[in-house]
Image (cartoon, rainbow, N blue to C red; front, top):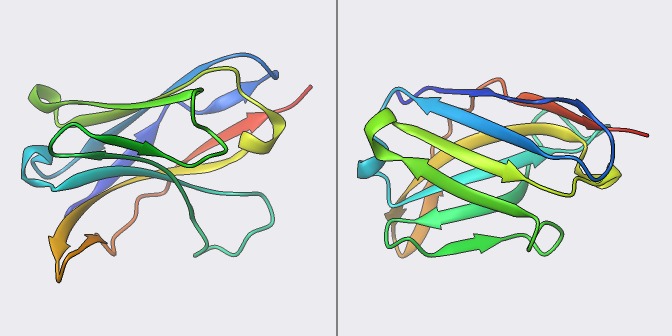
Length: 124
């Protein structure tokens, strides 16, 4: 199974930035898309909200709440994906997870195996 390990989270004040990293045990070049998700405080352990997607073509999509502030990217040589988070807001607080997907039956299907995530806390 593909394994994910997220890092780079921390405690920051609103308006500051963080760069999250995700190393994978697989080759991200083989993925049809890479993703970042997050779990907001108080949400169930298996509840994750979409944050960002980067397709194999390079096309990027973002949740409306982070559009213009977050940037997803990847480094194929390092099998690593990144999430650059700028102008962080209180609502960005949560545990951030990375994942990859393959297209099956016309849809992007995420790996069911999630990492532990990295905690991002935005507080004034």
